[in-house]
Image (cartoon, rainbow, N blue to C red; front, side, top):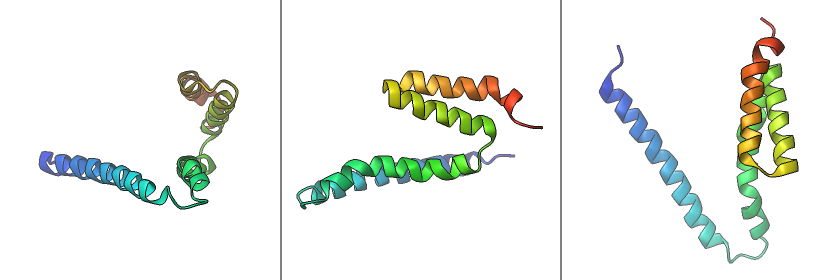
Length: 103
């Protein structure tokens, strides 16, 4: 049986941590913006953070997950359209998964 209070507490704590992380990063970025040479780092940071999450997932992923990620990256690179890229990645996972993944 799931405890409703524990579930609510976990959701509230996750929301608070995400919010504090984003706000803290924003304010730190504002303070560091005036330092010469830090601007390229601040501009590249979201991509680095995304890749830090993405790389282990792809490394441990199945064939359909790796193919879906490759499709998303290729479509984003060529079209710069998030909706089409995400939709294509989900379609590859949905329709290709049963055929590409063994077992």
